[in-house]
Image (cartoon, rainbow, N blue to C red; front, side, top):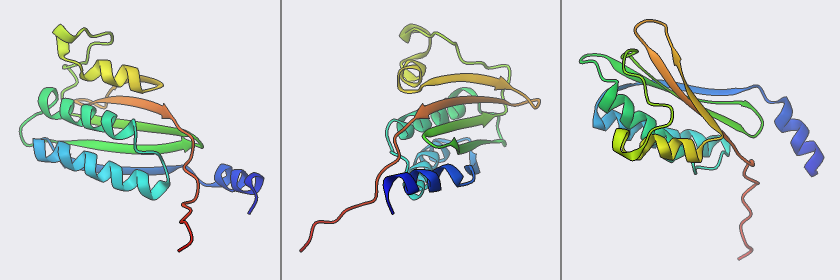
Length: 149
């Protein structure tokens, strides 16, 4: 298959989406990162910077968005070729992240998300939820070529 055929095949694939609820615990945040890596690898999406963004957003959901007895949701989507959207939804809509944080306000986490993503933001609702999302542009990984033995 030539490069033009591969690009046409990629453009014709339906959007890919993965979504999973996770416990609002440190273990849930770690599982979010591990599941994201597995899903991104299966889609042929580069792991970095996505896994760092997932780790930060999931950790924030556990630390700042946690409501006892309620989970958070990780959603990954490739809505168009070369674009990854990461969403983390928690149940504390009143606890919004600071858009242009300084390290003294919130640590380095959202500065990292701001630096590594193409863009990011917050969507409120449905009550009592909020979703913090980030988008990353990426070049699709090529086929794995193994050297001859």
